[in-house]
Image 1 (cartoon, one colour):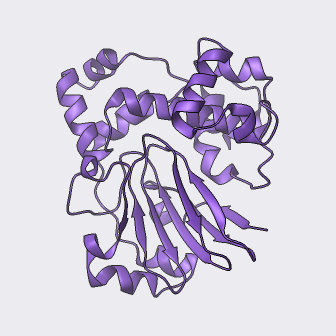
Image 2 (tube, one colour; image 1 turned 90 degrees about the horizontal axis):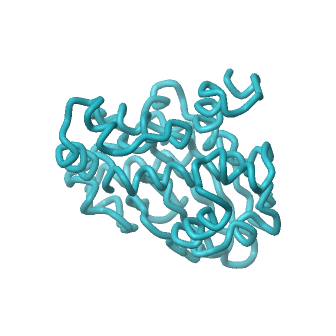
Image 3 (cartoon, helix red, strand yellow; image 1 turned 120 degrees about the vertical axis):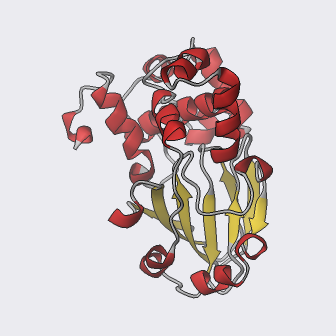
Length: 262
């Protein structure tokens, strides 16, 4: 049995980190399916070498050994930790953090706990225009890329270049990823019917959602969520990770659930 727990980040990291998490595998190896989130992750296996998971455009399978304890940090899109290379060079990569940070990676991993790692994490400056682009590309704000670029006083090619550097992927790819994350947020919360889930997150119909799910996860929605399209049965609580999506949905009048806006 694999234990997985998410927490909101400490206030110092709240503007750049989406969630922090703790995972412990049982007596057998565990196959972890990493999904595109629009951001990067730092993985700290206790007693092992820390790694960075770059922005994903497709699912990535990892076999985690039995009796392994991991601490993870999941960043918001466009808010990666300080790195010596642009993010588009790390797309779909799972690299040794020491290759990017040298000895600092080992010193950070030595903290060993969620609290210790968060206390030592460096914070990089965020491109404000990319941050605004991410906000506008959330699933509850249907907008085409040219409109978003114009709102930011950028040309589409300038927006694409800045997104590739700060997010790792082009704006359209990011928009599709965020839309799917919105679907997962609603499914995790169990707030909509199957048809409502597809419509509320901007898919043309259920078939459109099915195609995107296969593209981004390698599974159908029913298989991904554990047997139902209307709710997630994975047994893990991802509320910390999906809270920004649910809050944003409520603010835009898509959900009648006032408690989510707090």
